[in-house]
Length: 318
Image 1: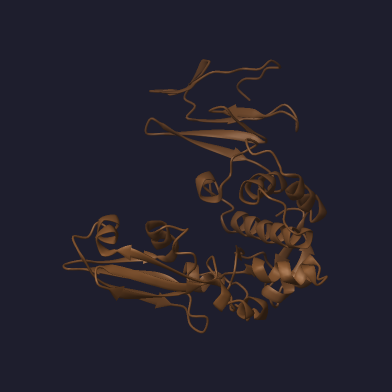
Image 2: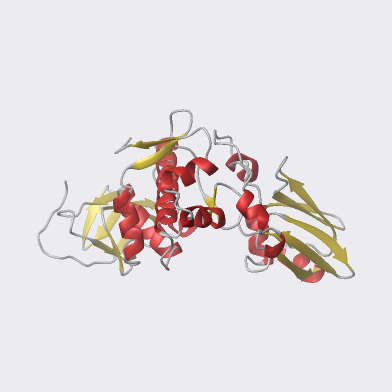
């Protein structure tokens, strides 16, 4: 411990040649850890409130700001940002368990890392996003509940509408991880045609977005069986560029390219995408989960339908 105090302190953090300055200079210190006085205390960074500890790492005159936070408060923040409206209770419980499973997977996989997730990638906003009542309830109801596959938490997520089939995490995100296989989703399959969508994109706009002089072709990389798109190859006159689905979806627009269950064809100077469902097709299908909950299924049964060969366990920490 190099400093402490009972009163509030507010200073700009500066990178000096021989260390960090925060109100006073700390020569020889290029890393600082700020520890709140108790569980009710918070730390403001750029006006945003954070629970837990804050760590600052100086690197080439810039700072990495890291928030060390317990899993339950982390879930309250990210889920409140994504699910701003109330969901069916059992579905929200299932989502929370999936999110906790993934958080434990990330923490366990990178135990020695300086940080586990990038805030902007997961929508983490500290305490700036106050917990929604339905999220807070689900976090408390499912506290410490985690899915395990082959004895450990795994990379887990959800998709809005699988359009009839889900696919395992590894197949879409191309990560060498052990996860449950995809499943057939009969409820989503029944509404597949009703949830058909299409969009078009001028070749000139795609060329500009991909830094190609001209688009001459486009090819899709598909997962086996479920035939979900995991990557796209865009060909130009002299160059070829590959994009994973998430990156390509951002280029086209998430509101247009709604899922990775699609085909593409060329019509004159435009590319026409036709697809079904919504999301990546990985993990828990929310459309199906809602229907199962309305039939009286509870979160454990809903999860078992989409994550076969898994166990639901209570794990307090790793």
